[in-house]
Structures are given as C-alpha cells and as structure tokens.
Image 1 (tube, rainbow, N blue to C red):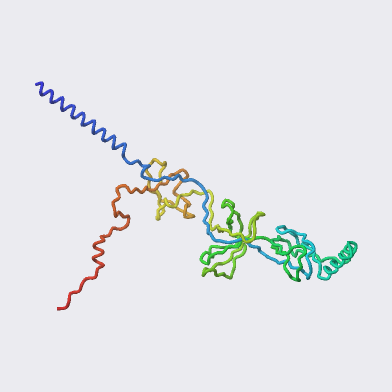
Image 2: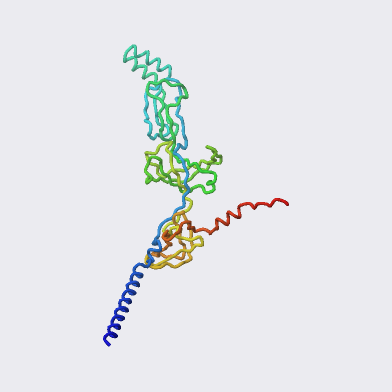
Length: 333
C-alpha cells in the first residue's frame, strides 16, 4: 500500500514538472515571437510641400554688354568712374586729351605752371560719356595711357542675367515666366537665388555633340556680390504643391496601394490611395490617408536565406544548359 502511494506521488510530481516546463516553453515562445514592429518599417504621414525640379547648368552673363570706346585719339588724363560701380546715362567716366592738346600741354610744361594753366583753360579735354544706365564691369586703361580712336576704355552692362544651357530633350518642359532657382559654384548651397524665364532661344548650340538651347532668366533682387561668368546649377520648377500629405514613394506599390496602421506598433492593413505629384522622393496622397496615419513596408531579412536564394523566377540551371547544348547528329548509315 505504501509503495502504491509512493508511485502516485512520484507521478504527481512528474506531471507537475512537465506542466511547469510546458508553461515555461510557451512563455519563452511568447517572449521570443517576432513583434509587429520588428517586421515592418513605419513612417508617420505629415503635411508638407513637394516640388518637381529640372536641373541644368548655366552661368551669369551681362544681358547687354557694351564696350565704351574713346571718341578721339589721344591720352587719358583722368579716370572719374571706378570699375564695379553703377552709372547713369550721361555720366562722365573719364577725361581724354586729344593728340594735339596733349602735345600743347606737354610743350607748355617747359615754359612753367602759368603757361600750363593758360592752355588748360583754353584747350579743354574731351569727356568720355556713359551711353546708358548700367554697371561698369571692366576698365581697360590707366591715366596717362595713349589710346586710339574707338579703343575700348570701359566695358559696361545694363544688368546681369542667368543663362541656362537646357538639353534639347528637356526643352519641352521650359516656358516663359517659369520660376527658376539656382545656386552658384563656390558659394554655399544654402544661398539659393530665384528668377523667372524671359527668353528661350530659337537657335541651338552644339558642345561635344550635345545640342542645347540657351534659356535666359531675370534674377530677382540680385545681390551685389554677383559677377559675370559665375557658374550656376539651375533648377527649373516644373510642378509645386504646398501643404499636402506626403508619402515616401518607396512605400507605395505600383498599383497605388499602401500598408497603413494607426500606430507604429499595430499590424498594418492594405489600403488603396489616390496619388498626385511625385518628386521621386515623396508622392502626394490626394485621398485614402489622413494626417497622423502610419505607412509601413515589410523589412527584408537575410535570416534563413540559403545560398543561391533569389527573389526572381526559379530556373533549373542544369536543365537550361542541356537545352542550350546542340544535339549531336547521328552519322548517316
């Protein structure tokens, strides 16, 4: 009788231990099971702006470049205007003594200051006049230099513009009054200037077998540090939408469906959405989503992947090789 009771007690403890082990196994499985947040990448939907840009190269140039030349042959007496300054039409830029006056003044210096003063009052130098309102971008002479008639003394421009070199395949995207942004080489990319297209060339240019068209852009509020010839990265604004729902484009499938969850810990569900403008990084969600939704995509893991594993169609390489090998023809009997 005692032996039987002892056996029952032994079986009782055995089943109790077995139950504890089972509960521990279930708890371990529950603890180690893959969490939803470990299976998906999540991004919260927020509002923002999307712009579609077309990038080209360009440079700053004078819209109207004008050489201010000497009206007579002679000698530069005095430079009045300085290079880099703005002048108005009719301003005196320099004084020039004709060849005859220069000879008379030089001869008078041999007779003393009174003679020089007399002939300086009687024989006046000729002024060099600015022919238009503009900016002096170059000075070609110095005081005392002898110049010939029609020799360039100053180079001036009315204003600086941006000239963009647009590839022929992109020309259909350009139109008058189109908004443009650009940055300058050598300057911080944060310094982004703006302008508008005012002229599109009808004639093309060919550089290194590449056909381009010059598109001219008026610069909005040009700063003083701009110089003719500066290289620029030009961005034509093709489309622009503001304060819209933005979705990372890589989270949207080709059939315009997306995985959506209410939080980054919930399992997402498939939902159809209507999309709009896309800039390759983000896409506009017109309908199907609300601000605060979370979009998700499955995480890719190489765990458990075998050598030769492929996402594409499976092929039997040995069979393919056999099919590719030409069959030997039997010799005629």
